[in-house]
Image (cartoon, rainbow, N blue to C red; front, side, top):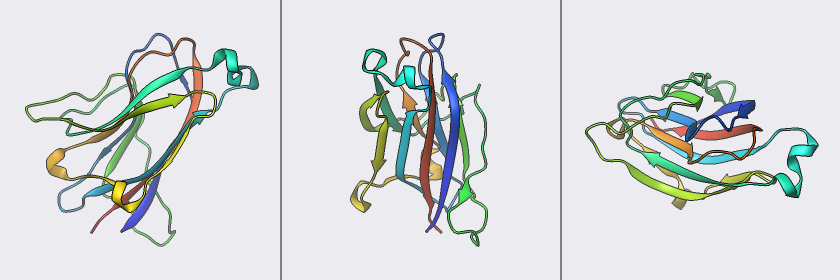
Length: 163
C-alpha cells in the first residue's frame, strides 16, 4: 500500500457557512483507498485557543457520495515515500458546498466531535481503517454545522492506496 498525505493549512472556517467537507477523497477503479489517520486543529492566534472560545463541532466521515463539493481546492496528495508514484485518487479540501447523495446510499462510518481548542488527532488501527472503492464513489470528512465565530484551522489526512 502506498501512503499519501492530503493537507489544508490555515483556512478560515466562517460563521456564514453551514456544513463543510474538510476533506474529500475519490478513488479510481481497482485502487481502493484507506483512511489511515486524520488530524484537524485550531491554527489561529492564541486568543482563539482560549477556553472561552472553545467550541465542540460535530464531525462525520461519510462514504458513498455521488457528487463532488465545490468552493474549496484540489490539492495534490503527497507521497510519504519520495520514490512512490503519484496518487491515482483525487482529493479536495474545504468545500463549502458539500458533496451530496446521488441514486445510491451513503454510509456514515464515524460520528464524533471536534473540540476547537485541542483539535483531534485520530490515528486508526488496522481494524479501524476506513475503506472506499470506486463503486462507493467518494469519502468525506465533514464538519456538520456552523461555527459560532470564525476559526482558522489546519488539517492532515493520511490516505493509503491499495494496488
